[in-house]
Image (cartoon, rainbow, N blue to C red; front, side, top):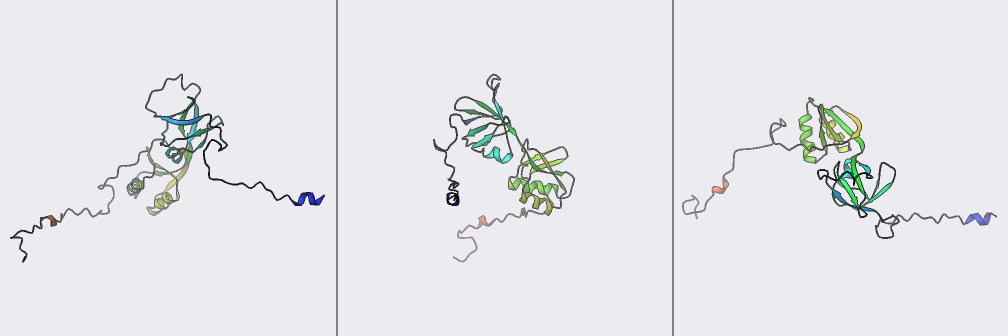
Length: 204
């Protein structure tokens, strides 16, 4: 009897092949969401009557995953190359619709009025971190880099789980935002006035 079990070498090798999306990648490609209709475009409500809702984090809205779970538990296949925003609609090749919503994710909440707040905002703008300005301060998508920067500026922050809604990446202003001098030397070096003519003063 034991010989029978000795060959159980588990040949179920999980050949984690690169996820190639060909006709035989194992997904049902009958319905593929491959078009984006921007939020500001008016869509007849009759078209959205049976629309599914998909909740995506900020990162997922930048690059929509191939497999996306809808709120009703079904999985949608998406082949999209565009970033999407909250309120955008996705349309499938079979004319089915899905609406993009914001998923709750981990955010750092920083209250305004702390020393270093404006400097942090400046850095966040330079780093293209998604920032949402709120009545009391700001929210930023949690990351290690972001946490280190908050600690660097000695800012107190709370970690909250919430949807990242409007993204307002602060404009990068080079004045009145921080007290360190960005070396905006206005002593223009007029070196372009160096004309080599007969009277430029050099011994030719």
